[in-house]
Length: 81
Image: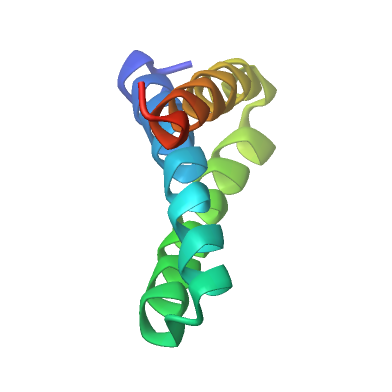
């Protein structure tokens, strides 16, 4: 397992969950262009993570931890602090 790929997966999953909150907000508000762009970015991030951990199951650990932290941060941010 390469540490820099693990770190990239970790960061990508944090970003994925935060961007997911933005995607949901843009979709709910009817902002089709922003939602479509975010959807593409989310798909690219998820694809990178999946391809990485399909090749090496150990990469699931940073993916899971990144998702957990991303969700935590996104909820804190969405609540305003």
